[in-house]
Image 1 (tube, chains in turn green, cyan):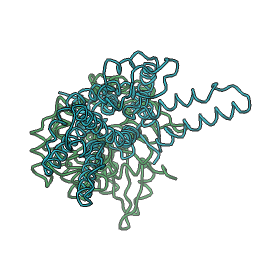
Image 2 (cartoon, rainbow over the protein chains, first blue to last red):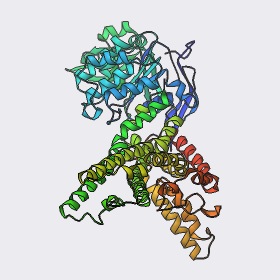
Image 3 (cartoon, rainbow over the protein chains, first blue to last red):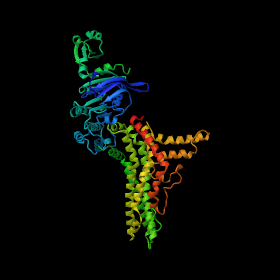
Image 4 (cartoon, chains in turn purple, brown):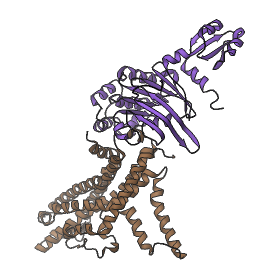
Length: 290
Length: 325
């Protein structure tokens, strides 16, 4: 996620948005490259949704933002031919029937394939005559995902797509997305609180807090930069001297999280572990709600 | 890619109950009442003087003159008008609440986020809802009332037949097709006339963060009272409450089908387009004078005002997604 990608599909410079006195986005710069799966992660009220709304042309903003070469404010209709989004769980209209939803999207979207959509639905219990209000929350998400995956879009934006679903639906949601949809010509941006579930599918990570991007890195960079060390009490003071990002206790040992520390030196103190995104998140966002 | 027809279809899917079943049940109820009246007439053996929508068995009795048949035919034309009128009453309420919810309900249940994820412009969305109220709903209502009227004719013919009478001369003296065409010819005028109300309701539907009804209805009432009160105190106000009232009436009630027939004309001089004649119903609907309403400034000022309101509705549709409930 370096700031000098030659041909990013999203390019933001000084992106700002203010609600009253709160800065939801504070002069944010970022680039997103094609063929990536970017996790946009932050605590409640961090500015995630505002950033997504700006990308989708659902809100006004200050600064510069280009999505697939379009200005989301003025070229929204063209942009939506290339961009899909699932904003929140269960926003499909409750009165619509499955077959009506398919007919409608097929009629208004030039890149939608009804056959593909029906093929995805064939793996579910959803039938064409059902109304959305008769479906469970998990089935509504399945239907929405089937509609979206049948669109050959360049960018897919997912805002908390699995909130409130049980683990079976959540797992299959991301599995379908990876196996049946994602390829190098597509880009996915996903926000979620269930970091553990997306951690293994992400290629890039973006932490956002207080309207600013606090971490932006590829997963490889994250793996190189951040490391956890499990330290016995006798070495704890030495570890603390190396200025860890975070410290937590488990089974009488201390686990320290380091950013860019010398691995050889850390290995002397204890066992090294790959830092999980969730631990990194907790360490980075420390004090957010305090 | 046929975005616009599908947008109209979408409105039909969502509001089938209001668009189809409301006029259906209104006319069906009327047909049932007709049959009940006929049955009770039979039971009490008091056929004489029983009128069903201005039509009585006596019209068919004995030595009937050509004038009598013509009058009975006119009575049938009146029945056809009554059928159209009844669905129109339902149509007013359905259209009113349809428009108030058209750009609000999907924001309240957040399904707007689904609609906005598709490549459909806000202008097309608002236009599809306006066109639905202008033409789609009135056309469906007229079609259903015509079908119900045909069923009514069959009931009348059967009833007469049971008594060994032939009702066909009377049916032929009526003008079912001519009446239908003339009623259909009023729809384009009605669509233009209704535009200010359509624009007004869609505007508040797109604007309101909650309770669009209060904005759309209470605001005019408050304006009316404020104007009257300021006038009472001798302050600057619109001279003559009638003027303001007629403007507000245009904003709220122009979707009443046929309201343009008799509405006050303001500065446009006498009403030359509507010549009601109970003795010659089909003549009252002669397009050659009905279309004179297109020459009134009242109609066109309304159309221009509606364009401003619709532009406002599109503007808010683009920017306002959240509601406060």
